[in-house]
Image (cartoon, rainbow, N blue to C red; front, side, top):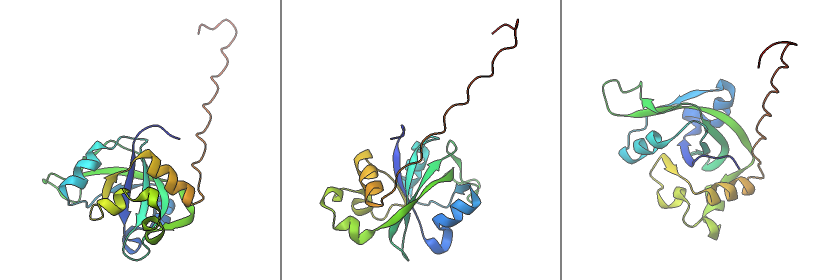
Length: 158
């Protein structure tokens, strides 16, 4: 499992679906207008992983996004005290994990989607993150191997 923190982020698929994030490759996560959710955005660090939940129409976790930037001001609210981060797609779920399935899973009774259902950005315990991944029959992609260092030219100093 990757290091860092885990989150649940929500978007209505008609507004910004996970498939669109995949197509765009990157987006600014803007428009959060709840103080607790804003503070959660401000706590994110690059590399953190987010369960991507389609709210309203689909009501299912459909993918994993990765935080790509440090938090900054929300450009959709100039002069106001809101935050945003850049997000990128990591992996779409093989099988979406519906809200009904989550509610029917005793091990997820304390999942933030259920306990903090009004928030669009919530921290998620690693055990919940891993269980939802498993339920979605999805594995995180392997981190790319680091590139080998080029060999020094003969006589060159390291």
